Image 1: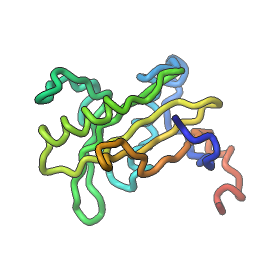
Image 2: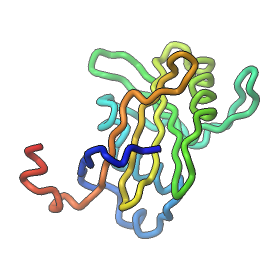
Image 3: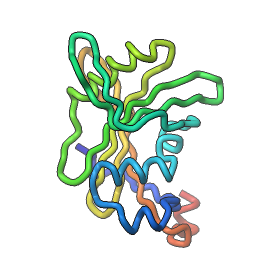
Length: 163
């Protein structure tokens, strides 16, 4: 679950108005906002590119899985990444089992790329929580968590720019 005590980072909303007008508050709307606002890039500090939505595939010893969206990316040193994204809208909860399956899938399908699993969730007040996750001692752990609010650019004050 998102930590309600974290700072909110305001970003200019780049979501096309027609998309905002017709989107719902579900997982697909969340994935669209993440994509149009390049939140994966901002959050991880890498150039990230959406590779595929709803990747349905099989994982050995697991069976069929679905990854909500998968990104590939590169950092300024040339390291290449694969970022499976798990998205939850409304009152749905992020899944540890799904995260483990996403990591296992990336190890099988993209063995040369560094896997950086991401979970994202709508919070109250139109906040978007992003988590980078990892496996440590066979447990899913949070590497980083940040909360973003997408606003018109004129709603970001000079004081907020300074901080």
